[in-house]
Structure formats: structure tokens, C-alpha cells
Image (cartoon, one colour):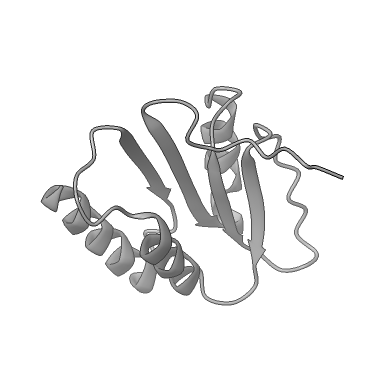
Length: 119
């Protein structure tokens, strides 16, 4: 059996989206997902307990991840995998990180801003 796989690179420019926050950010996360186009591609990380419902309508290519541990580690891992080391006009990265009241998230967000400013 042959399985055809579609590349996420079929369009130019390539857009990759990260949305991250905790349960208190769910209204903002829901609003951000509502304005994305149907072909948006990326990940949503929500730091929440198992009993917090994550009823987030999202485009088909956006994956929702419940994070019960450190949101900072999840964002760091995403950055290590998806942030370009060099500027590429064919690639756009969009990042929204909530939870600015949490010091570790604010620090991670400041680091992301620094990376974006270098591109």
C-alpha cells in the first residue's frame, strides 16, 4: 500500500504558528485561533490540568497540546525545532505567548523577542 503524504512546504511563504499560554489565557487563545485562516499550520500549548477542558476549535493543521509540566520547556523545545537560524524570505514564524505574569514565561518571551530581532 502506498501512502501519499503532503508536504507542509507546498505553499510559499511557509507560515508556522505557535500559541502558548496557561488555562487563564484560554479566552485569548480561543480568540487567536478564531482569526487564523483555515490552512494555518502550527501548535498550541496550553498549561492546564487534566480536568481543564480544552474545547478549542482550531484549523485542521493546528495541533492542541495540553502541558501539565513546564510551559517554558515546551516553548524552548518548539523554538529549538522551529525557529530559523537564518532569515528566510520564504518562511514566516508567528509566536503568541500568554502568561506574562509568570516570570519564567516573561523571560522566555523576552528571549524570543531577541531572536526575532536578530532576523
